[in-house]
Image 1: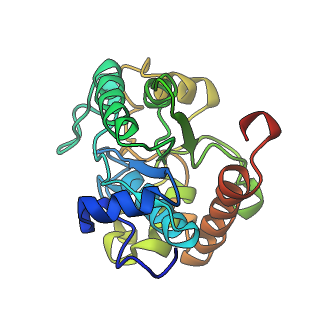
Image 2: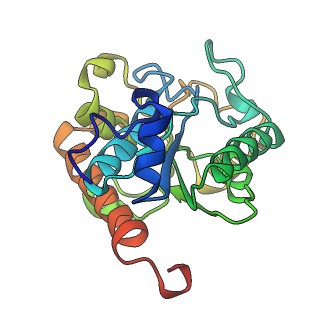
Length: 245
């Protein structure tokens, strides 16, 4: 099948081309993004950029159809005052994804792989409960993996810190303003409340990013991206656990 389509994106294909592809492979990759601040040095679409890159690379390598990105997710109330951020409620994201999955399932898709790079627990929870009657729905939290071996400062929580900043320097360097990067450390208990949406305000002086984005490099981003991509390749597309085959 590789090479027989001009693209694996549903946005580029006619419905007969999708029907033809479904005769050979019934999987679909759906990147789920966020309009979410990650500090003054990163774009609001930082998490979306990471999810899209992974979806594109996996789609091309395994000749799997790729759905248009769903660009909005569940942010936490702490971020509401950062200009441009926009969030859905968890139940709204859950309902929207359920309706999309139902539509694709009715056309014959049997596996939907949703990829997110969000670090917020409410988004993960909304996605984890998406339901299909027959199709298998798999949720990939791309950054929910130990990346400490790649970092100059592996200790401590991060949101727009060394990990995401490095990934954006690798994937979209022109979108990163390293001169605006500011370090802001947060203890683990406050960070746990932050990602759960239970922290009313960020500490005084915190620009939105948490961690040490000033340590980020494109090379670190390249290594992290390769690790995350390989992990998804193995666990989802090449050798899934026996109970998921």
